Length: 403
Ligand code: TRP
Ligand code: SF4
Image (cartoon, protein in one colour):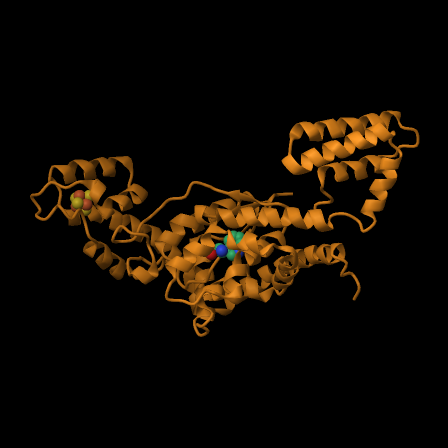
């Protein structure tokens, strides 16, 4: 079975080239290799934009169309919408019970985002809890890998801690302590004391040596103690390691090489900065935007030599041009051998070439929106069966099996 990858994106409406290069391109690549789950994180959008209720639906489906346009294949990838699966909310609620407040307050994005989005009131319970909601999104599918940017690495780290704590609290049967006591009683007194000492040392300091000593003692008991069973070994190993069964799986962040494409003005590409090119923007508009794009501010006249390092157009060449074109740019720019419009032309051509198939693939979904909805329906069904399965285990582990 292929390892599962899961990632989500907030519905921000039609995606731009920065989204494509920074994340989506990577998803398209991953789907061939992994059991891939990609979802629209619409509840996450509400953690910051809870007052805006009229844009969500359009934003959600525009974004899914961009995913498909970019090459996400609904046959290979499971595509769904978070809010269609109340199981995410159920797991979030159950995990919230045992998650220390400090874990959430310490997530670096919490303070960062508060600072950045000063104009919004983010002193809300939902905003504080949102990394835990993200943990629920991930854990409910028992994902092995989560492709996320650097900025989200701390959320995956929190997810791992939450899973570990859950398994620690609930990964053992209710009579675990009694079973451990019974196994310990079979050990010679000195050995029992020695095992407790190693368990404490390992629990407090994580010392691998203490763990090894404890494991050796259990192995010795298995060979020498009369009436010892495999269960005794199992209980005592769990006791020694402070672990139980893995009900929730600790995921790993998948940091793959991503391409950074800045906006037209050289700062981060973002719709709200007005420096973005949408993935499916009209060709004439794409061309006009690029022609107007600022260049090296010190190259005032055509006859002034320029420096590509000072020019946002050069960042686009790094993503869109081959070596020989880039050589031509550096030479032409620094010797005033080429004009800026001339320099931009290969970029304009490359972007238009890249966008043509996106527009083509999006077309049937724009004319018949029922087609996107059908894809999401199917993905949601697939996701639901996995999510329900996990929730059964979670409810049972937490003593909520009665119905
Ligand atoms: N928090 C992510 C973002 O803002 C989106 C997201 C929500 C996510 N749930 C997730 C990403 C689970 C990966 C896995 O970009
Ligand atoms: Fe920028 Fe190209 Fe003009 Fe140089 S020639 S300033 S790299 S646009």
